[in-house]
Image (cartoon, rainbow, N blue to C red):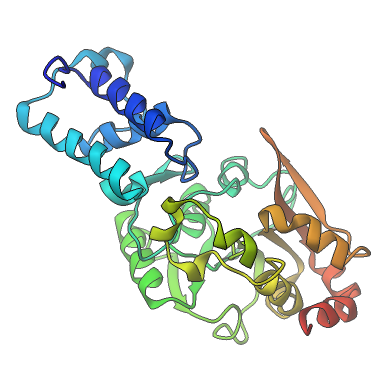
Length: 304
């Protein structure tokens, strides 16, 4: 059945066809079968995602072909995300180690990083930044890689995630400017203040989590589920962020589909919902002064 498959393009086309026929869910860095297949084939061959098209007709060895086909079958049978199968994901133009210790790197915040957080940081000095709920470390490490003058802390409650984040810090040789800190949100960061706090916390509602496709069952629930309205973690971040932001500091948080619940719960808070190239993605920006002004309402919401 697969004897005719010989080249990189052959394997990508075959994998994409199998993935589509199997009805897989694409939500871990990719949104379609072809991109997912390209990730699997190229990463398993230790090739970059931007491989020049001329190499597409390169022929695989028998061992390489067998390895790729085995991963294709495993992706279909187990529903494991491709990033876990090949141990690698790309985020903000950078490679990251990826495995079940943390969520697969994926967030529209990558676009903000690549765009220099413009206009939110235009004209502002940033010396220190925090990636809260860091998981694999992809957001904070990418911020440091794209901004050589920044010192960045990565914080998470999961020791497993922090171990993976430290491996990614070493991968990018950023140990002189990036550190990983065990912290339940801000609890382990007493006295620390930042010019920028960025977070992609858990925000999946209990009802949504119960019906997630099989691919998500391979990821740590700790990084996904966030209560009845998906706001258990985001509200704590809003409540405590002023104590850890510089006077002119900015908070940027991804809450996904829980955007509507948050806006309804705190209608007077001036959330700025960021527009991305593909449209709104449930990411807000807030100045520290706005958090301080509405601290009473935020605390009331957080103490529900």
